[in-house]
Length: 152
Image (tube, rainbow, N blue to C red; front, side, top):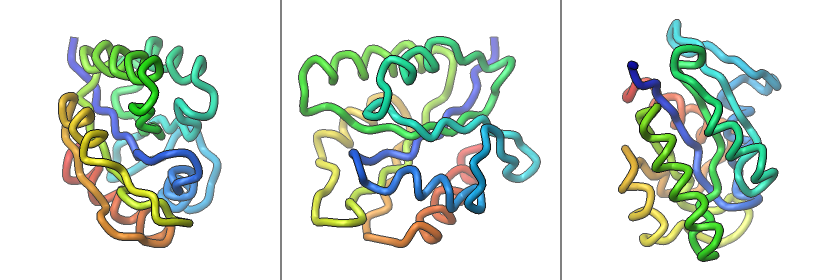
């Protein structure tokens, strides 16, 4: 079975993940979006929004039906139980999909940042690229699209 490719936009709660995805899709609420002749299934809700649905999605995605996916992800590594749940889910998901993480290093509205420890966890699973400055949603969307195109 050929593995699919999963692209995650990463940030904590109220970090700008959804707005980044809206900018990527020209403010359209879509389940599918075309980038460079490839169709991507998009999941805007992350594991910090509705965890059960997020983990169910990861379990049920199949590369044959959805070879390219874009998913919002919150690195919930500070809570031991949530950390283990997320790491186990990513470990299982990596069997089916090649994982690529686009990290919004800075919160858009305040001074919070993704830690080096959180980045290290992600690097265990796939490609990681940081957007290391604050940027508006359009700039984040363009940067995320460039990241996707570089890794497709």
